[in-house]
Image (cartoon, rainbow, N blue to C red; front, top):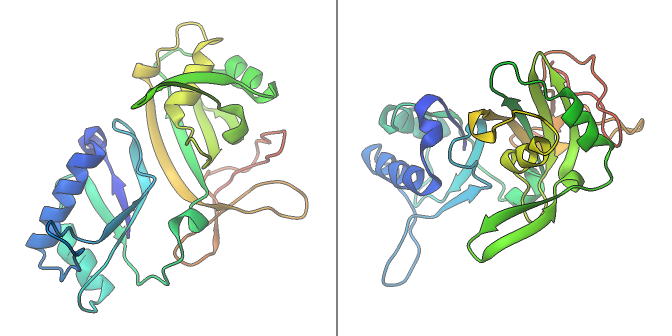
Amino acid sequence: MHYAKRGSARFTSHRDFARAFERALNRARIPMSYSSGFHPHPRISYASASATGAASEAEYLEIGLSARCDPARVADGLGESLPTGMVVLRVAETDRTAFTELLTASAWLIEPGPETDLGPAVEDLMASASHLVTRMTKSGPREFDVRSAVIGMDVHEGAVRLMLRHLTPLVRPDDILTALARSAAGLDPADCRCTRLAQGRPVDPDDGVFTDLLDPFDGEPRRVWRDASTAFGNDCGIIGHR
């Protein structure tokens, strides 16, 4: 299932979304399959959900059913039952290929506050061999290299266009903003709006330029950006829009 988080729904935590989604499944009378044991749960698998506060046009999950259903029926039923801002975009039967194989990169748009020029900071980060940041985790502060996850990044019409590899630990846009804030005067990551535009596998063509992400539903290359005129440099190239 391919779904979006729009508007105020971007402030919904993953836990709250999961509760809302399970209620929508019940209201739509989707015949769910459940785990065994004393406390059975519906079989739902989420794929690298975006962080609270980030909007997304490219969230994915998988559900297990107890009976075969028409994907269109599932999409329509959930569309009528989900809260505002949570939008089901596509539903299909799966061949059970692991999400980790289908979703290995994300394309993001980061919109900073007004009159914030991130061009020099982006150039500095792209020119570096590594860039360490520290993030607080459940087990305490953790330091990791954000540069190794960056496939491509540039500034277009004031916004940062970013493509990230899905590594462990997962590098998020707020980690990139933390890195950029070290050399971008006046940048407040809290004032920036982050939107995930796409997920998939980056295409690795013969010329070494990454231009597309392979769609996890049909395996076809999809371009993200509306223009393909900007070269990203390093091990990445241009991202455009078909």
